[in-house]
Length: 244
Ligand code: G3P
Ligand code: CA
Image (tube, rainbow, N blue to C red; front, top):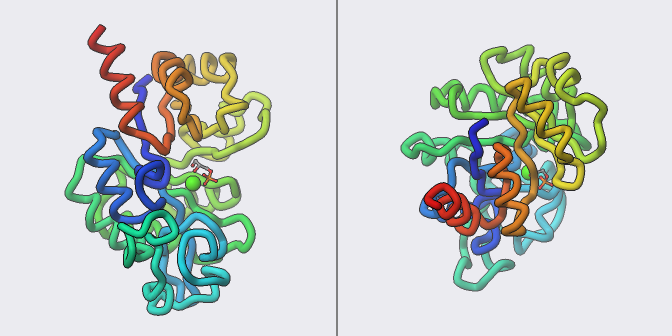
């Protein structure tokens, strides 16, 4: 299987997560793709932010779903990380799509559709993927597997992936049952048996979040893809063992 490196929320070790500078840094690191998180604003615009509230990663407070797109744009999403990033904004998914279209990067969109459930999230995201003709480079994942089933119903051409944090029994069968093409397990449950059996069934395994150099090496060598906050290190590890 292809061992790909995805920058988790962009290059989030060195840049404010889920922002354009973090995505640009991921591109420059030599990563194969980026991962980001999407929610809807009050006026139904898909925006890129991880937490349900803006409190941790901006200078504002309150739930993302209570902000209009215009209002969320006025928040500073860079200073919390470092003052050199002052003035960086929360990007819309559309802005990221416009940028990524001109790169070679793959894009994993995580639908933050647990609680609250954003009823239009799948439709809005699918419309953007189609608008930018990114169907071949996008993977949609979610911890809410109902959202994955809905995505598949609306857009059978898109790849969906099962995100999970617990020891699912024979997850390759479950993934197939809900039309998903890949498994995205949390590192502690990405046990060798899971990796071996899924790989033998040609089902990609992409593990999150892998920041330790030794774990990066083991997983990449086993043919897994990884999500990492530190794509620079992962790329150099992969380059070293491929060259040796
Ligand atoms: O998609 C992998 C990973 O991002 C899922 O967890 O909490 O970092 O969004 P979280
Ligand atoms: Ca995520």
